Length: 177
Length: 301
Image (cartoon, rainbow over all chains, first blue to last red; front, side):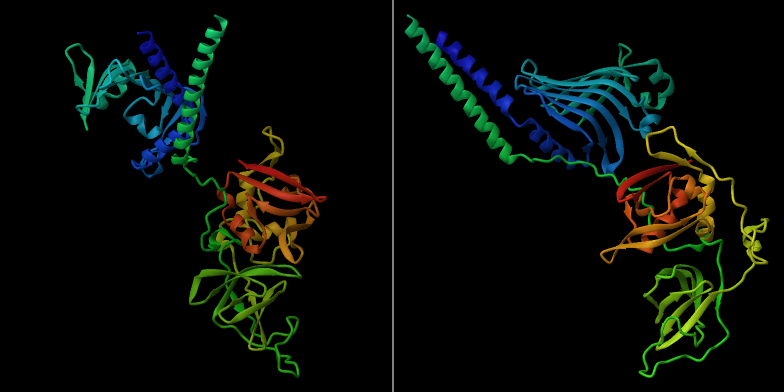
């Protein structure tokens, strides 16, 4: 038993070291290349490897045809294997989006952990209100529940019409891919 | 007992060290396969105005129609039959060209020229360059001298009535009869409260110069400045005291090498800047003064 515990401890130590020595900045560049396939570019950012996490600061996200879509203060990526998360702080969407949604998003987070390995948990809050949801990797299905703010209800009624109202009064957006 | 525990610690330490080394090797192997540079969006931030074909509506107080001098003077062709010197007398008419503007010094200069059949398609021609078979050899005060086939030709600007283009304007002091130009705006160059070296220029003033090309040369005279036979910029030869150029901080003998990061190594470079000057929000001049490079930033408001 003692030997098994020792072995597990070594495995964890080894995984931790692999994560520590993984060139996360370069891995991020690879992710950028992947996003480029979808014509999404993350530019003007500074990338910092913190050992067990990666911080991407002051980035500008360009969508199709190089249109500036959003400015992001900080993206924190943590990939520990058993617990992985991407946390995004202070997003300001481009003015073109101002007709559809409030442009200020304070926080967005996506988490995948060993406790629920099939679903990526989503959460966020900002001028639009609060949202939480999940991405089911097996069924390839996205579900977001929105608790809209007053601003969202009053000024973005057209966007609200695209959401389904649930029995609890929350608004739900679903999408399969 | 101590020996046993030391052995255990040593063994554990060795295993951990080996695991660290393996993890590091894995990291290095991954590094070999991953990209070393990210993808960035390159945004053109150059404030150099886009080049357009020359439009004299924004230049030299509206279109000027020129005619070839009527007087024909016998050509002086040397005994060897070669082309006459630029200073020689002109000999023939150029019936198919229009001279729309010119700027010249004793050493060089340029003209704006077009074919009569395509009057709007104006070309910029420096001394030494050719257009429609005519080589520009010299610029005089009132005419441009071309050579072709060993003969010299003169092409001068004709007097014209600007009032029909410029509307209700006052005569400029010393202006030839019938020629009117818009009134010079009140000159305003303010010291900026911004970063060091940044000054504020009146947009009105810039627009005035943009529309009245000739007026620039009343306030400032510049010559191409060469180093090792290569033009590196424009040297300020004369500057009128109290003129906007003087107020901007330009001084006699300054050599302007760059404007908005665009090298000023030819007249064309200068014209490129000039052409879009009324659309700029700022101008950054790099100049050499007393053998030291200096940068001045002007904000246009």
